[in-house]
Amino acid sequence: MSAEPHSLPAHHVLILGGTTEARQLAEALESDPSVHVTTSLAGRVAAPALPPGDTRIGGFGGIAGLAAWIIVNDVTRVVDATHPFAEQMSFHASEAEALTGVPLLALRRPGWTPQPADDWTFVDSLADAAALLPGFGTRAFLTTGRMGLHTFAHLTDTWFLVRSVDPPDGPVPPRLEVLLDRGPFTLAGERELLARHRIDVLVTKDSGGSATAPKLAAAREAGIPVLVVRRPAVPQGVAEADSVAAALRWIGSVD
Ligand code: NAP
Image (tube, rainbow, N blue to C red):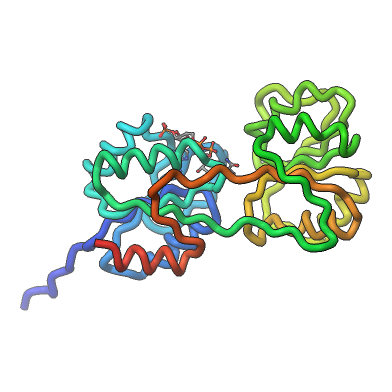
């Protein structure tokens, strides 16, 4: 008696990862035998939580490298589920779609919306946040990640509480304390942090999502102003989804 032949997956989905949504998408696709998933991580975090399915870690070597990887590995769908501020990777993904013809979806969780009691000022870049910061406070809670810290390095009069997953490794402001931590965070925890460090201004990217949103509620309660860095736009012409469920529908529907 011969064994039942196994059907090969019809799709190879490459997920450009580094976010909660990328992991959730890999988890949702895990049980689908028609799909083979590879999640790609940049390798920025020393000990990343690995999603189910295959993973590859490290840059592709630019647009040409990504396009070659897509072709060589018979990828049939690409989902750019990188962080909304991973602008270069998103641009490379868009260019690779043009080169290979393999359909691309940008999965972006919605940004945050201010509530009536919020005191938010939107800025276009970390540099703009740094330029405005001294006018807003003297004790800043900086949650924009360790990569852009050099942008604030010239601010000698501001005291910074910097929260990041891994320690900063470039130029940093002279007066700072680093808190190594990774979300999700709680409102009680954020409240306590703001009070203990006498924070009078918060700086954040408009990352969206619930895992890091409690800092915004804590700032609202305490009447602390927030500098919010606007998201870069998704590259022109790229299909977009704002939820994992919508991304799953796209994977199943696109020709
Ligand atoms: P970026 O500036 O847009 O990309 C820089 C380079 O890093 C890319 O050209 C690519 O190198 C490589 N890269 C980025 N994401 C990759 C991925 N998922 N797989 C393989 N290579 C990747 O990226 P970034 O802002 O530094 O973000 C790096 C990673 O951290 C991303 O996975 C992102 O989702 C995550 N992250 C970013 C932020 C943020 O605020 N930017 C926050 C949280 C998490 P090659 O050109 O060699 O392919």
